Image 1: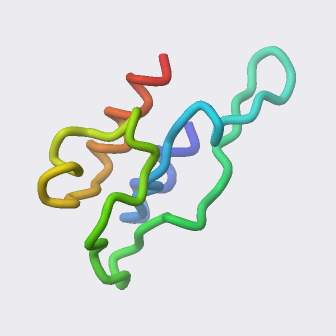
Image 2: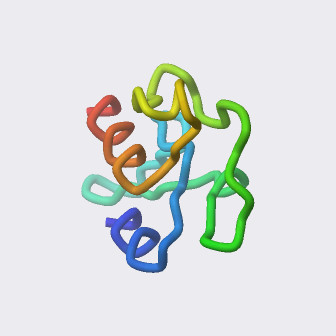
Image 3: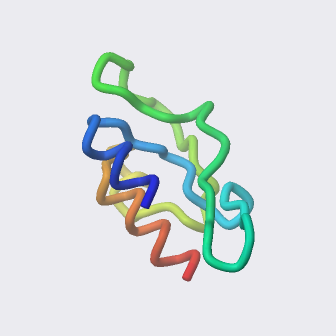
Length: 78
């Protein structure tokens, strides 16, 4: 999964949603739209940057985006 590679490199996508998933054939899904991706050298967000429908609870209150919040969004997509 593409998110696994991002997370292994300490990158959080921060906007996993159905509109940012593209299908390529029957068995391949690609994650797109990396303009909100967070790297270890980025300053932490001070506002909601993800599509609210897919947002993990901790992102609403403290803007704590993480691999866990990406995975929350994957679960919402499913």
